[in-house]
Every structure is written in structure tokens, then in C-alpha cells.
Picture 1: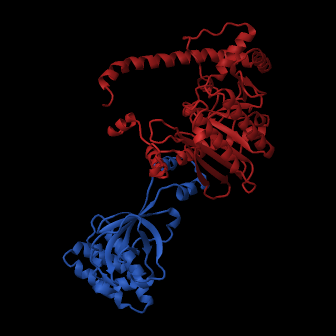
Picture 2: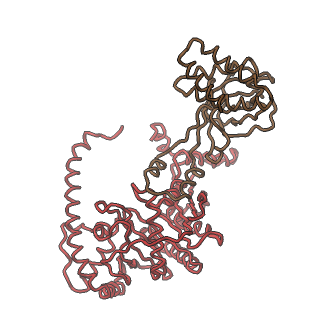
Picture 3: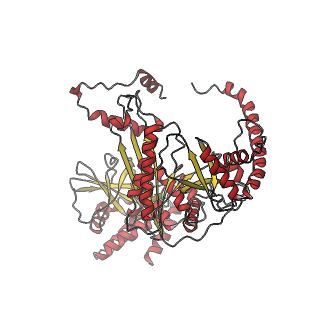
Amino acid sequence: MPLNYASVDNSAQKYAEQALKWQAQNQENAKQLRNLYAEASADPRRLRELIEFAEQEQNTLYAAKPLNEDPLRSFPITALPEKYSLIAADGSQIVPSRHRSLQFGLVNVGLFKVCFGSMEAPEIKLVSTLLDYEEIVAEDGTLLGEDDISLNRDLKERSLIRDEVNPQIPRPVLTLTDGPLDLFYRSNIKGATARKAQQQVFDLDQEMQKEGILSAGYIDKPGSALIHKMLDEYCRGLGLSKPELNSKKAQVSDRMLLAKIIKPSERSALFEIVSKQAGMSSDRLKVAFFYLNVSTSEEHPWLARVEIPLWIAESPELVAFIHSAIYQDAQVLDSHPYPYSLHRSHELAIVKQNEVEELENILLSKIPPESGFIATRSNKAHAKELTGK
Amino acid sequence: MIETRKSIPIGKLLRAENSNFVAGCRVSELDTPAFGALVKVSLEDKSEIYGLITNILINDDSLVRQLVSGVSIPTEYVADNRYNRNLPVEIHVLTVGYAQNEQISHRLPPRPPLSLDVLQLCDDEELCRFTSLNDQAYLRHILRLIDQPVEELLAAHLRQAKKCHDARNEPEWYQGACQKIITLLRDDYQRLTSVLDVLTELEHE
């Protein structure tokens, strides 16, 4: 059966009204917060100190902290060097399922390396890694889930992208991945696994820093409210009452807050991500970010968040280069701006359902029939197959 | 199988029927096939199917369509779309004959080639051999085409074939081909006129 459209239709009108109301409230909230943002930004040093105080005082914090730029300013793009390299990676995965005949996991990473100024076609590569049995089973014997395999994919993306850098490609080299550089957002991965992953990311970045290789994470249509959280801490620090927002659930996204401040092609000021959580590794990648308006239209701003390691944020020239390189790459798909290099990496990496089936058949064919291995699908999976769902 | 020294692989079969077939190739391989060229596919049973390239189609997809509307595309990304992305160039071929036990026929083959069979460009020697036989009967396949630029296809093919035959000191071949076309189109005055226009143009080249 498809959807019961009659039933959905009854609720659709109500939903539309709620969505409109929610958006209007958000816009009103953003307006209020913009005033507070202007007030807080008048003294960036004080704002920074307040966030640092909160950082010391609180066990858990996820907020923005202004760096040395005026938070109310936005910054234009600069000219790009004639030659530079851009390496993008994006991955997809097969998450092991107990419903399948075999439990297997796969990480597929697409790599796209372009040397601008070479006039040559970019190099493309696809790295498919069938995960070892040990990698798909948790310590308690259960199969790993989506988040764990995604973490594995993220780490593979970063190590593979690093391997693509060689002395022959023109400098500067920018490596680009889709999503945050900071692993905090995977909040349900905790303990030793999280610490180990953060250590790996940290070590990799240390290596890259030594070699002067730049990295950035691109977040399209970000929903985070790092600045809202920063303003909450500002109010708390000064003993001010928080602005009265229309709903307790209200969280004004940075995108909504800054949309009218950053002109097309420009970037916001730089902020550091204060990401504090109990049990985190002390050797963690420190991340900064800026918002980039990749739109070409004043009326329709489109903000993406660009995360960079903090050491890069300390160099205005490097920040300017990353800003311009990513903006330029997103303009290739200018009607829906998004970095072309990331799109191509994704296009390379995507695993289709029929490929999952094919891989399962390959794996099954490797198991000798006389081995006595029991490989049967769940009855539920079998029944789903009957209806093609 | 008829041995040719210079048959060049130019693509692989995508789909086929008795009267025509379509091969795919990469853009990087596109410098060899040309509109009107004689090509062949060698089958497993040692027979060969001959055809003329009637159309070369450059495919698109949603990404290319979006790029087309973009303001500026770096040269490297143009090359990416041409050489890296999996968008085969389609080579459409009109079947004009086949060879079995080294005997060339200008009739349609008993069965079409199969998918992934290799499409090869015939060399000058094979072009002369194929076009010389059977009183150029293969030309009827071209003249039967509907909704296609028959005159242009004839011009392209005759130009290539004439050059080969002239080089072998066989100027009478072209006269024979023109005579054959006139005979085949004797009941279609309108088409004959436009074909003769093209042939006149060809003679003045």
C-alpha cells in the first residue's frame, strides 16, 4: 500500500499553518537575537572572555567564540593563485544488517583531485573497503550501527585524502570533506571509541600542519545554533536575562541569524568552536569556522559553514585562500551552489541498492557450500523482497 | 573472417537490431569515428557485420545540464565531464551488409551483433573491398532511411569512399555509385534532385 493520502491530506493543512507560524516565530526570534548579537559584538574581547569563563566553569558546552575579527564584519573574496590543488573526499557505507544472509559492512570513499592551472582532467579514485568481521561487531557482540560505520567512513575519508597529497601537485593544497571537522556532533559515540577517533583526527591534522596542507569541512544548510548558544552565555556571564523568545524550543540557527549580515561571496568573521564534553581526549582537533554566503543573489542568501583547524584560522592569508577556493568551487554549480569537487566525490562514492545485493552475492559465492555455513535472510527481509520493499 | 591490418576499435555495442545498432565510446576515443564512416563488428562465429555511422550522439545528464547554465566552468572541470564521467558517446550505425566465410553480402545479417561486441573502424582497403562488390547494392539501405539527413550521409560516405578508390586509380567507382543512386531514386524525383545537388557539390570539392 502507498500512503493513505486521504489521511495525510487532513493533516497537511494544519502542518502548513504550523510551518508558517514556526517560520514567522523564528524570524522574529532572529530579529531579537540580531540586536543582542550587535550589542555583544560591540566589545568582542569581553565576549570572548565571557565564553572562556563559561568554558572553564561548565562541564559541557558547545558554542561559538569570536576570534580576533569583528563579529559584525563580513569579508570579501580575494584573488586565487594561478595554480593550486583541491582534493575532495566523500564516502558512503553499507551498514551491517542482521536481516541479510551475511552480515557485512563496507565503506566506499570517492576521491577527486584537481590541480587548477594544469588544464588537465582531475584524477578520480574510488576506494571500497570491505570491513573486517571484527570491525562490524561491537565488544558486546552486537552488530555496529549507522553511527559507528559513519565514524569509520569519516576517518577513512580523512586518511585517504591525506594519502593523495604528493610533492608533485601544486601548492597550496586544500583538502575538503563534507560535514564538520569536529567529531563532537556524533554525540552518541562516546568513551574510548570517541577518544580514539579524536586522537586519530588530531594526529592526522598535526601531520598536515607540518606539511602545510590545508583542510576544511563544508556544511551545507547548517542547522547549528553556535552563536545563539554564545549569546546565551553572554547573557549569563553579564547577569542579563535572555531575550524572551516565542517558544521554549526556539533555537535560532546561525544561518538565520547571519543571513542578512553576510553579502553574496563574502564570509563572516571567524569563530572558534568551543566543544567541551566529559571524557573527551585532551589531544583534540581545535576547530574554527566561518559562514560563507555562496549565493550570488542579495535577495536569496545561502549560508554554508566552513570549518577549518584553528591553526589555519590564525593566518589571514590561508583563510582568504580557503574562502575564495571554496566559493569558486561552489559557483561551478551556481544555480544551487555547492562545491563541485564534493559533489563529484559523492557521485563516485554512492552505493546503490543493487550494488549491495551484488556484493552480498559475491561474498556468498566465496563460502564453500560444504562448509556448513548458514546464510539465510530473515523472514522479514524475505517478505519485503516479495513486495519489492 | 576478413583480415584487415588497420581495424581500429572505436567502441562497444550498447544495443542492436538487424537493421541498425548503437555503440558507446568515451569522449577520449572520439577522434577516430566520423559521420558516414564504414565500421564493422566481428562476431564470435567469425562473421562480420558492416555498417555506416549515421549519427554520433553526445549524451547529457542532470549535472551537465546544470553546468551548462553556469557562468564559468574551469577548464579542468570541462575535462572532468568529458573524460572522467561515465557518459558514453553514442555511435549510431546503419547496417549495410555482412561477411560470412569471407563472402561479403549487402543484405541484412541473419542476426544483430550482441552487447559489448567491439565496434571497429574499417581501413581504406576494406572500405574499397566492401563498396566495390555487388554493384554497390548497399546504397539502398541509406536511401531507405526516414527522418535522417540522407543527402548528408551519402555525401560523407561517398566522399570517403571516392578518396580511397581514386587513390587506387578507380575513378569509375564513383560514377558507378552515382548511377546506382539515380537508378534507386528514379521514382522519387524530389529526393533525387536534392541528392544530385549534394553529389554536384562533392564533385566540385
